[in-house]
Amino acid sequence: MICSICLSKTSLIETLSKPFPKEKFFCSKKKFKKKIFKCLKCDHHYIHSYDYRKSSYIYKLNYDNLAYGNIKKKFDAIKNLKKKESSNFYRKKFILKNFKFGKQKKLLDFGSGLGIFPYSIRNNYDVFFYDINKNCINFSKKQLKLNFFNIKKKNNKNIFHYITCNKVLEHLNILDIKKYLNFFKKILKKNGKIYLELPNAAAFKKGYDRQEFFSEHINIFSRKSIRIFLENLSFEIIKIKSLIEVSNKYTLRIILRNKLN
Image (cartoon, one colour):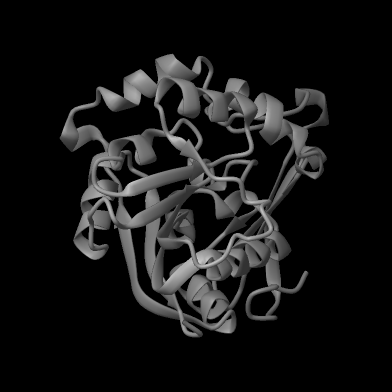
């Protein structure tokens, strides 16, 4: 297998026939099969597992139940965490430090899930959200009173000052990641910025039984592979920060701007 990021050789690290103890899965245990590949040059990781991701209905209809359980209960549990225990608190702090805020600034949170982040930052920006899961959409619209953004409108162009995308792109194949990042360029205003948050492949040093390498993740970027990938898409990389979150997740925080703006 050739790495789609740097075109180098990859190595098969593990082949698994059952999920890790804390790993969520989206098919019958009898069908579970997973392979983990690692690029020998840029450390990008690929997860090849059961074929649920070919059917988008998993994310549209069932993902909320399988990943979160009761949406409101999960939302409240995260919302009520103490600041020092909340990854979202530190995420918000990072965003406010790097993006100028004000209600005249339009911000889109892409792939909002439970709506925790856009809800927490709604008083700092004119916030919109996007997700494909119907139950998450309804919860964010009706319970959280957030504005849903329809990405399918033909006149979507030069709308947002900022786009945030928290732990979303790792669920997609490379072609879809490129598609959405190019779409972000289209809907950003001139000099608009993007915040990406991704699992960091450096977590492999602690073992492959971690959440960073769970089966719903397809592409796990390293600091090196994300730089190569974004530069090839003509983005200006303003910042790449590696950190270990309070949840013990290895994470990349990235701020970029479209060179063409």
